[in-house]
Length: 125
Image (tube, rainbow, N blue to C red; front, top):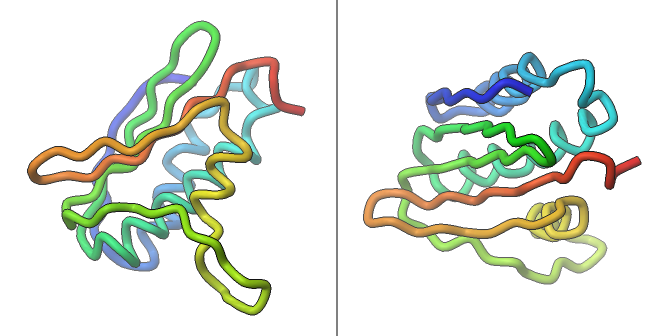
């Protein structure tokens, strides 16, 4: 997967645009990761739009054994892993990131909040 970075203007359509952007970067050798990558990008882009309420940046970094995807927004909020009851529509995104990624984290800077995840090649069906 080639590396890249792109900024998206806040809005519901930006979630689809971010997914298409990352999908275009996925190399044939990483087909086995495609569904997981796209699901997690969708979750993090949705969080940026809904909770960050700003534009957001998607970064993809390719290393030999893994790939990293970062979604950074400019809203200043603190993402939280929370428990969601079966009747709630929201509250599961970071649980999915935790369950499906090899590792993940949240980085705060004065003007951005970045949520990232790594996927190690060969560890996902």
